[in-house]
Amino acid sequence: MTAVDYRGQTTLITGASAGLGVEFARRLAERGSDLVLVARRRQRLEELAEQLRAQHRIKVHVVDMDLATDRPGQALAAEMQRLGVHVTSVVNNAGFANYGPFHEADPQRLQQEIAVDVTAVADISRAFIEQLRTAGCGVLINVASMAAYQANPRLALYGAAKAFVLSLTEALWAESRGTGLRVLALSPGATRTEFFDVSGSTQVAGARRPAEPADVVRTALDALDRRNPPPSVIAGRSNRVLAFVARRLLTRRQVIRAVGRLTAETA
Image 1 (cartoon, one colour):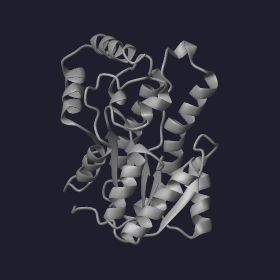
Image 2 (tube, one colour; image 1 turned 60 degrees about the vertical axis):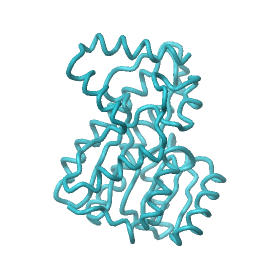
Image 3 (cartoon, helix red, strand yellow; image 1 turned 135 degrees about the vertical axis):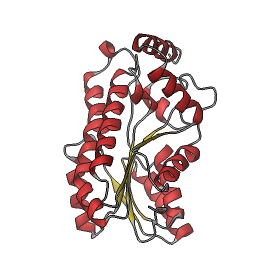
Protein backbone atom coordinates (compact mmCIF):
# COMPACT_ATOMS: atom_id res chain seq x y z
CA MET A 1 0.00 0.00 0.00
CA THR A 2 1.05 3.58 -0.63
CA ALA A 3 0.13 6.72 1.33
CA VAL A 4 -3.57 7.55 1.44
CA ASP A 5 -4.68 9.99 -1.25
CA TYR A 6 -7.48 12.07 0.28
CA ARG A 7 -8.07 14.19 -2.82
CA GLY A 8 -11.53 13.53 -4.17
CA GLN A 9 -12.60 11.88 -0.94
CA THR A 10 -15.27 12.97 1.54
CA THR A 11 -14.51 12.35 5.21
CA LEU A 12 -17.18 12.38 7.91
CA ILE A 13 -15.84 13.46 11.32
CA THR A 14 -17.84 13.26 14.55
CA GLY A 15 -17.04 15.46 17.52
CA ALA A 16 -15.75 18.01 15.01
CA SER A 17 -16.43 21.15 17.05
CA ALA A 18 -13.40 20.89 19.36
CA GLY A 19 -10.16 19.12 20.21
CA LEU A 20 -9.10 16.19 18.07
CA GLY A 21 -12.12 16.59 15.82
CA VAL A 22 -11.05 20.08 14.78
CA GLU A 23 -7.49 18.91 14.26
CA PHE A 24 -8.59 15.98 12.10
CA ALA A 25 -10.68 18.39 10.02
CA ARG A 26 -7.76 20.77 9.49
CA ARG A 27 -5.23 18.10 8.61
CA LEU A 28 -7.54 16.23 6.23
CA ALA A 29 -8.59 19.50 4.57
CA GLU A 30 -4.89 20.22 3.97
CA ARG A 31 -4.66 16.85 2.24
CA GLY A 32 -7.54 17.69 -0.07
CA SER A 33 -10.49 15.83 1.44
CA ASP A 34 -13.99 17.28 1.40
CA LEU A 35 -15.56 17.10 4.84
CA VAL A 36 -18.76 16.42 6.74
CA LEU A 37 -18.47 17.94 10.22
CA VAL A 38 -20.78 16.46 12.88
CA ALA A 39 -21.32 17.76 16.42
CA ARG A 40 -23.98 19.42 18.57
CA ARG A 41 -22.59 22.98 18.46
CA ARG A 42 -23.59 24.24 15.03
CA GLN A 43 -22.06 27.70 15.36
CA ARG A 44 -18.61 26.24 16.01
CA LEU A 45 -19.01 23.88 13.08
CA GLU A 46 -20.06 26.70 10.75
CA GLU A 47 -17.08 28.83 11.79
CA LEU A 48 -14.66 25.96 11.19
CA ALA A 49 -16.32 25.07 7.88
CA GLU A 50 -16.00 28.65 6.64
CA GLN A 51 -12.30 28.73 7.50
CA LEU A 52 -11.58 25.45 5.76
CA ARG A 53 -13.53 26.32 2.63
CA ALA A 54 -11.60 29.59 2.30
CA GLN A 55 -8.18 28.10 3.03
CA HIS A 56 -8.36 24.88 1.03
CA ARG A 57 -11.17 25.34 -1.53
CA ILE A 58 -12.94 22.17 -0.45
CA LYS A 59 -16.58 21.31 0.14
CA VAL A 60 -17.59 21.22 3.79
CA HIS A 61 -21.02 20.13 5.02
CA VAL A 62 -22.21 20.74 8.57
CA VAL A 63 -24.56 18.45 10.50
CA ASP A 64 -25.58 19.42 14.03
CA MET A 65 -26.59 16.19 15.77
CA ASP A 66 -26.63 14.71 19.25
CA LEU A 67 -25.12 11.26 18.86
CA ALA A 68 -26.89 10.07 22.00
CA THR A 69 -30.09 9.81 19.95
CA ASP A 70 -31.41 6.51 18.60
CA ARG A 71 -29.56 5.06 15.56
CA PRO A 72 -27.27 8.01 14.78
CA GLY A 73 -25.55 6.07 12.00
CA GLN A 74 -28.80 5.51 10.18
CA ALA A 75 -29.74 9.18 10.64
CA LEU A 76 -26.38 10.36 9.28
CA ALA A 77 -26.58 8.01 6.31
CA ALA A 78 -30.06 9.33 5.50
CA GLU A 79 -28.82 12.92 5.76
CA MET A 80 -25.90 12.16 3.42
CA GLN A 81 -28.33 10.68 0.90
CA ARG A 82 -30.52 13.79 1.16
CA LEU A 83 -27.50 16.03 0.57
CA GLY A 84 -26.18 13.89 -2.26
CA VAL A 85 -22.88 13.32 -0.43
CA HIS A 86 -20.95 10.04 -0.84
CA VAL A 87 -18.77 9.44 2.21
CA THR A 88 -15.52 7.52 1.58
CA SER A 89 -13.83 7.92 4.99
CA VAL A 90 -15.07 8.19 8.60
CA VAL A 91 -13.45 9.42 11.81
CA ASN A 92 -15.46 8.41 14.88
CA ASN A 93 -13.99 10.91 17.31
CA ALA A 94 -16.92 12.00 19.50
CA GLY A 95 -16.82 10.84 23.10
CA PHE A 96 -16.98 11.97 26.71
CA ALA A 97 -16.55 10.61 30.25
CA ASN A 98 -18.24 10.85 33.61
CA TYR A 99 -15.65 11.24 36.35
CA GLY A 100 -16.25 9.84 39.85
CA PRO A 101 -17.21 6.62 41.64
CA PHE A 102 -19.57 4.54 39.52
CA HIS A 103 -22.11 4.11 42.35
CA GLU A 104 -22.49 7.90 42.64
CA ALA A 105 -22.94 8.61 38.92
CA ASP A 106 -26.17 9.95 37.45
CA PRO A 107 -27.75 6.97 35.62
CA GLN A 108 -28.95 9.21 32.81
CA ARG A 109 -25.44 10.56 32.24
CA LEU A 110 -24.10 7.01 32.20
CA GLN A 111 -26.68 6.07 29.58
CA GLN A 112 -25.63 9.05 27.46
CA GLU A 113 -22.00 8.01 27.81
CA ILE A 114 -22.81 4.51 26.56
CA ALA A 115 -24.82 5.97 23.68
CA VAL A 116 -22.02 8.26 22.48
CA ASP A 117 -18.91 6.23 23.32
CA VAL A 118 -20.19 2.75 22.42
CA THR A 119 -23.46 2.67 20.51
CA ALA A 120 -22.74 5.59 18.16
CA VAL A 121 -19.31 4.25 17.22
CA ALA A 122 -20.75 0.84 16.36
CA ASP A 123 -23.83 2.26 14.61
CA ILE A 124 -21.94 4.80 12.49
CA SER A 125 -19.28 2.25 11.58
CA ARG A 126 -21.98 -0.19 10.48
CA ALA A 127 -23.94 2.46 8.58
CA PHE A 128 -20.98 3.45 6.40
CA ILE A 129 -18.53 0.55 6.30
CA GLU A 130 -20.01 -1.19 3.27
CA GLN A 131 -19.65 1.91 1.11
CA LEU A 132 -16.19 2.57 2.55
CA ARG A 133 -15.14 -0.95 1.60
CA THR A 134 -16.64 -0.53 -1.87
CA ALA A 135 -14.84 2.78 -2.40
CA GLY A 136 -11.63 1.05 -1.34
CA CYS A 137 -9.59 4.23 -1.05
CA GLY A 138 -10.39 5.69 2.35
CA VAL A 139 -10.02 5.17 6.08
CA LEU A 140 -12.08 4.34 9.14
CA ILE A 141 -10.55 5.80 12.30
CA ASN A 142 -12.19 5.05 15.64
CA VAL A 143 -10.74 7.02 18.55
CA ALA A 144 -10.13 4.76 21.53
CA SER A 145 -7.89 5.75 24.45
CA MET A 146 -5.06 4.66 26.70
CA ALA A 147 -7.96 3.93 29.07
CA ALA A 148 -8.78 0.95 26.83
CA TYR A 149 -5.79 -1.02 28.08
CA GLN A 150 -6.77 -1.44 31.73
CA ALA A 151 -9.58 -0.83 34.22
CA ASN A 152 -9.96 2.81 35.28
CA PRO A 153 -11.33 3.52 38.76
CA ARG A 154 -13.43 6.73 38.73
CA LEU A 155 -13.56 6.51 34.94
CA ALA A 156 -14.92 2.98 34.99
CA LEU A 157 -17.46 3.20 32.20
CA TYR A 158 -15.21 5.29 29.97
CA GLY A 159 -12.39 2.75 30.15
CA ALA A 160 -14.80 -0.09 29.42
CA ALA A 161 -16.28 1.83 26.48
CA LYS A 162 -12.87 2.50 24.97
CA ALA A 163 -11.88 -1.16 25.41
CA PHE A 164 -14.97 -1.95 23.32
CA VAL A 165 -13.90 0.55 20.65
CA LEU A 166 -10.39 -0.89 20.52
CA SER A 167 -11.61 -4.48 20.21
CA LEU A 168 -14.30 -3.66 17.63
CA THR A 169 -11.94 -1.64 15.46
CA GLU A 170 -9.16 -4.22 15.45
CA ALA A 171 -11.72 -6.83 14.36
CA LEU A 172 -12.91 -4.55 11.55
CA TRP A 173 -9.27 -4.09 10.50
CA ALA A 174 -8.98 -7.85 10.04
CA GLU A 175 -12.32 -8.12 8.23
CA SER A 176 -11.42 -5.27 5.85
CA ARG A 177 -8.01 -6.53 4.74
CA GLY A 178 -7.83 -6.76 0.97
CA THR A 179 -10.66 -4.26 0.38
CA GLY A 180 -8.50 -1.12 0.18
CA LEU A 181 -10.18 0.34 3.28
CA ARG A 182 -7.66 1.15 6.02
CA VAL A 183 -9.06 0.72 9.55
CA LEU A 184 -7.34 2.08 12.65
CA ALA A 185 -8.02 2.42 16.37
CA LEU A 186 -6.25 5.51 17.72
CA SER A 187 -5.43 5.54 21.43
CA PRO A 188 -4.36 8.92 22.78
CA GLY A 189 -3.28 9.51 26.34
CA ALA A 190 -4.03 12.77 28.14
CA THR A 191 -4.42 15.43 25.46
CA ARG A 192 -4.96 19.17 25.61
CA THR A 193 -8.69 19.22 24.77
CA GLU A 194 -12.02 19.91 26.52
CA PHE A 195 -12.23 16.28 27.68
CA PHE A 196 -11.37 16.85 31.33
CA ASP A 197 -13.68 19.87 31.60
CA VAL A 198 -16.60 17.80 30.35
CA SER A 199 -15.78 14.76 32.50
CA GLY A 200 -15.82 16.81 35.70
CA SER A 201 -12.19 16.28 36.74
CA THR A 202 -9.97 19.28 37.30
CA GLN A 203 -6.63 18.28 35.83
CA VAL A 204 -5.08 15.80 33.45
CA ALA A 205 -4.53 12.60 35.36
CA GLY A 206 -0.91 11.56 35.49
CA ALA A 207 0.15 13.97 32.75
CA ARG A 208 2.76 16.62 33.41
CA ARG A 209 2.79 17.50 29.70
CA PRO A 210 -0.46 16.59 27.98
CA ALA A 211 -0.12 15.91 24.27
CA GLU A 212 -1.11 18.44 21.66
CA PRO A 213 -3.98 17.44 19.33
CA ALA A 214 -1.75 18.02 16.30
CA ASP A 215 0.71 15.36 17.50
CA VAL A 216 -2.05 12.83 18.17
CA VAL A 217 -3.66 13.29 14.76
CA ARG A 218 -0.27 13.12 13.04
CA THR A 219 0.32 9.75 14.72
CA ALA A 220 -2.92 8.39 13.25
CA LEU A 221 -2.39 9.70 9.72
CA ASP A 222 1.23 8.57 9.64
CA ALA A 223 0.21 5.07 10.75
CA LEU A 224 -2.37 4.86 7.96
CA ASP A 225 0.26 5.92 5.40
CA ARG A 226 2.49 2.95 6.20
CA ARG A 227 2.96 0.18 3.65
CA ASN A 228 1.27 -2.23 6.08
CA PRO A 229 -0.93 -0.13 8.44
CA PRO A 230 -1.46 -1.58 11.92
CA PRO A 231 -4.89 -2.29 13.46
CA SER A 232 -4.24 0.17 16.28
CA VAL A 233 -1.76 2.78 17.38
CA ILE A 234 -0.96 4.49 20.69
CA ALA A 235 -0.08 8.17 20.45
CA GLY A 236 3.09 9.14 22.30
CA ARG A 237 6.23 7.16 23.06
CA SER A 238 5.74 7.38 26.85
CA ASN A 239 2.20 6.04 26.47
CA ARG A 240 3.46 3.12 24.42
CA VAL A 241 6.00 2.32 27.13
CA LEU A 242 3.31 2.49 29.83
CA ALA A 243 1.04 0.19 27.86
CA PHE A 244 3.87 -2.32 27.43
CA VAL A 245 4.71 -2.25 31.14
CA ALA A 246 1.05 -2.62 32.13
CA ARG A 247 0.50 -5.60 29.83
CA ARG A 248 3.81 -7.43 30.21
CA LEU A 249 5.51 -6.57 33.49
CA LEU A 250 2.79 -5.92 36.08
CA THR A 251 -0.14 -7.93 37.40
CA ARG A 252 -3.66 -6.69 36.73
CA ARG A 253 -4.03 -5.97 40.45
CA GLN A 254 -0.94 -3.74 40.38
CA VAL A 255 -2.09 -1.89 37.27
CA ILE A 256 -5.59 -1.20 38.59
CA ARG A 257 -4.25 0.10 41.90
CA ALA A 258 -1.74 2.35 40.13
CA VAL A 259 -4.37 3.79 37.80
CA GLY A 260 -6.71 4.27 40.76
CA ARG A 261 -4.09 6.39 42.52
CA LEU A 262 -3.68 8.54 39.40
CA THR A 263 -7.40 9.11 38.87
CA ALA A 264 -7.88 9.92 42.55
CA GLU A 265 -5.46 12.83 42.10
CA THR A 266 -7.78 14.54 39.61
CA ALA A 267 -10.50 15.24 42.17
